[in-house]
Image (cartoon, rainbow, N blue to C red; front, top):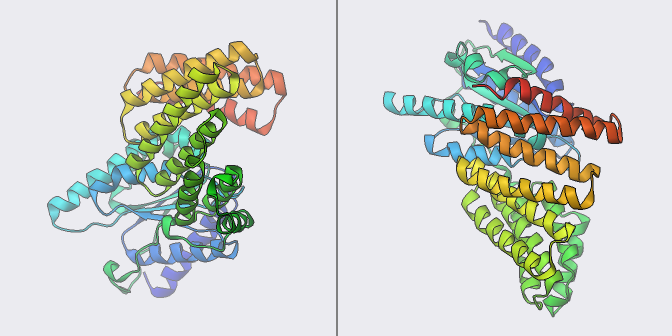
Length: 409
């Protein structure tokens, strides 16, 4: 291919790819196959430039070692939209390094990560809700459709990247992608306000944790995880200095959940699990003290879900199912106490889907189908109760898809 042909072909691919990433309002999947680093570098640079106009980051990751599979999976599944926007996730998995044995190990790691992402398509659609770009070696092209059938069926864009006529540089000379944890930005108003309060208040226990929670949330939305971690530690210092009455304990539980969220964002699920476990223990203590009021029960169910999410991301499916099953049982009790409000119905549907996901991962397909069917029935009841809202219709669509495509091997 001549240089003009190469540039023209790559430009055409970029024009077609860009709308799928820039205008997406939820999960979309683009799969690119390549034989050379040059077109990958060019497209990634173009996308980063477009996002920078809107002060959005490109969440770019590379799989270069088999040991990265679990951490990358956790990082991707913990990604979320930012302030109503949906910046894409770019995952390079095409490079081959080392001797023949090492390259084969890396190929196997790619297939493991793809398989796990395929199993978690529902989480990508429901929670991540952002475009994902998979960049794979051209040699994978014939096998990918059969290896990730669930994801392949919903992809919005596929392209075979052209190879330049002249080698433009070795992969090893390219700058390493900056992980999201290192992104820095100007503090939001909530962050500046908390810092003012922190610096001017000598007795830290007088600080209102809610101001800190708003600051942490603002930092997380900007993906400034270093700032979020500092803020979490400050809020925890302020809360632990106070008398541990029930209201303060609930604030401590919320702060620990934020700590777990930050650790998940950093790709350290073990540390996240420690924080979530401590929050869960506090939720149990609160119920023992205050009784099973709806707020305490919902806090407990959410805390159990967070623990289950970490276990599922780490492929500890039996442990995840235990946490999800307890959360589901609490959601059923809440429904009996509060009645069929839209919130309790949707919470119950989500819990059923979580249990079904791990049942399917454990090859318990009949059990998975039963809970997915119950979740589908709840989605229909929600539409009858609140009408055809976009959220209700989307939940119904996903439930129908799970019944059809996720309940058989």
